[in-house]
Image (cartoon, rainbow, N blue to C red; front, side, top):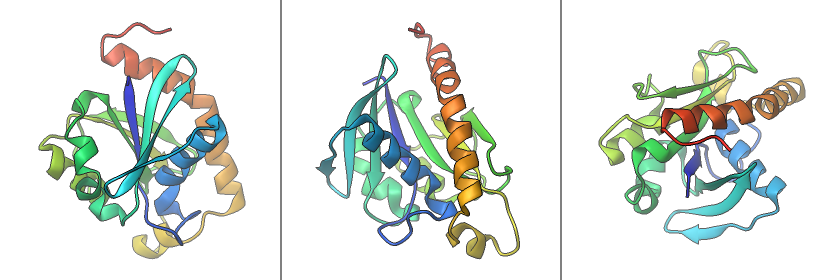
Length: 176
């Protein structure tokens, strides 16, 4: 495994919400690749190729704020530098996608749960902008409008090759 993409989100019923953009994205990658999921303790994982890169994808079956605990068995086997946590980011405009490394959780409880389990913040985060309006809780739990979904999907499609290149360069790997 070259990287583990962990999509943050909530269980069934929250699909298509801003808060589920990470989980929905990872599930979409697996579906698009035509790969199957394998059940793990409180979640599921799948192995696929993104371009020439072997990537394991995972999602929790539980609530976002418990992802670290739900995926503990998988996370405990990982080198943190190979983890990419994919999640929503209210501080970014819709369609803004940034890869960061070693940052604090910034108040994101799903990321906090992963930091708690790993004992470090030295992993990658793929932060996907969902904007911010009014009450943050109501905003992130609301469904993404179709225009916003399209913008995020297009930006991600355009950005993913560059993101993979950044990951490999940061880890001293060769870019294929």
